[in-house]
Length: 99
Picture 1: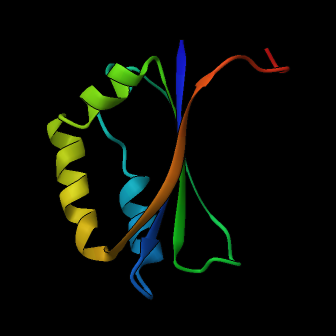
Picture 2: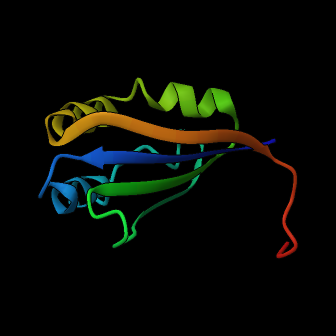
């Protein structure tokens, strides 16, 4: 079962690009932890928001990834750049017309 996590993070004014750069750094161990896809994006209509789309092998793989040292370090580095306002949705992927 594939698990999707679609989220948004609100950066402090002027910090969006720093958050994007941090999220785009290579993170050894994510694929081994079960990450199938990790996409970071922005929308100029929301100049302080960063959007993240993740696909995981399972909800458990996603949860376990949050305990990886490299992920914990990235979260700690990102927190001072963020307002704390976050949103998102999680769901089980049922399929795709592309596969």
